Each structure stands twice: as C-alpha cells, then as structure tokens.
Amino acid sequence: MENLQTYSSNDVVSYYEKYEGLQKPEKAIFNILKERLPEMNMLDIGIGAGRTTAHFAPLVKKYTGVDYSKGMVDATLKKYGTKWPSATFEQADVRNLERFEEGAFDFVLFSFNGMDTILPEERETALRQIRRVLKKNGLFCFSTHNLIALLDIKGFEWRLNMLAAIKRVFEVRKIKKINSRQLANVANENYVTINDGAHNFGLENCYFRPSFQVTQLKETGFSDIRIYSHTEGKMVDIKNELATGEEKWLYYLCTKA
Image 1: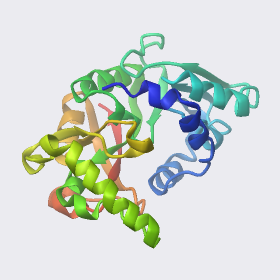
Image 2 (image 1 turned 90 degrees about the vertical axis):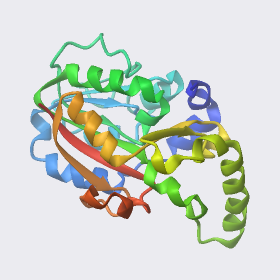
Image 3 (image 1 turned 180 degrees about the vertical axis):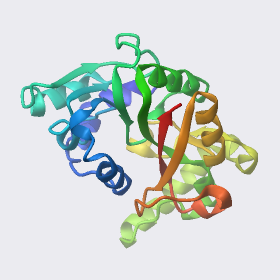
Image 4 (image 1 turned 45 degrees about the vertical axis):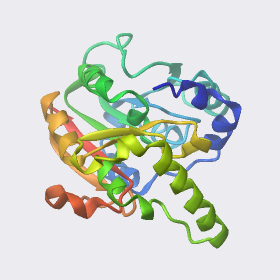
C-alpha cells in the first residue's frame, strides 16, 4: 500500500494546513493529561501540517514532531519551526524509530488515522517500535478506522447538503465496486484494507475490528486500554461491538505495560 505520494502532494498538504482544532476525543485526552504535560517528553507521529503541534508543543517538556511526508514536515516548520525552543521536527517512518532511544518519551500520539496508512501486517512492527521508545507506564494514543462501520456502507459518512449527498451516492457506489472483494466477507474479518474515497480516491486505509485491535495492543505489550468515540469524545464500551457502527473511527489510549 503506497500512500506517501498522496500525502506528499501539494493539494493534500494544503488540505491539512487548514486544520487547527483538536478532535473531540483528542480534547478529552488532552484534558486528562493537561496537568502532567509539563513533565512529559512527547513524540507526535503523523503531525501533518501541525494541527496537534499547536496544542501540545507549548505545554510539554520536550516536543518531537515527525511525519513520513517531507511536505508535511516542511509545512509545519514553516508555521512553527522556531516558535518553541523545546520543539523539533523531522521526517520519520513509524515502522522504524531506531533514531530515538529506548524509553525516550512519556507520551506518544499518532492521530488522524495515520496508523491505517501502513500495511496491516506492518502494524505490529509499528506498535512495537512505539512501545520501545516509550518509558515504562508511558501513554500511547492513536486513532484507527472502525471495521464495524463498513457493515452498513450504504450509510457510510452521509452529509446533510443535498448536492453533497447525491455526490456521496456515486462515491459509495464506486467504493463498493472497487472494493467488492474486500467487502464481500467483511463481517468475518478482523481487518480489511480498502480505498474509501479519501483524497479523491488517492489513499488506501486499513479498517480494524475494535476487539481485534484491543487484542493486538495487549499482545504487543500495552494495557489499561480505553476507547473513545470520534463523534462524541466519550469513552465507549465495545462489549457490544456492533454498537460502534456509527463511528467511522475510534481513538485508543493505552499504557506501556
């Protein structure tokens, strides 16, 4: 799955430059950590054009922002490169964080479903890399697309505007057509990789079953796993996993065991 070209395009970089605010679950997690942030060394993975940087960099003890798109890093440097002496920015791939020492960070954030842009078989590698650079009891937060949302793809991310809704009808038809093989047995899968129309059908994203994601986190050495709704920012209980179907993606907060 090759998404780097899309994330490096000027149009997509410009798209992310418009984003500034934290998403609802990020706000909830930010509030949980707010009192502790001044004592934390933070690694912010997939910074895009600096959306999360503006909120965390001023507060943490040391901030390191990385992205695997040089265009994204350059956009962040242009806005914030010299604003905070304790902040640094560089190009890096989550699958290889060997440049950072073991236990270097108290908090790692990987927002906006960046984890889903790598191959599902490489996800465990990424999780182990993140765990390695975390201190004992360090916190890891990330978002990921929710496979349960694909069970009713007809209602997949509708919009209120009539023209946009009509356009979405055709988009959903195209999504179903080009991903027919992947969607044929989605109810029985733990994860699927599809082209879901993002950035003019320029990306492939992994969708993970929440219960499987929890299992994978436990197997790679994380505990105290909490899941947050993307739409409401509240903690959700996945004992009834099907109840998460309206959540196109979910946020996970966990601790290095």
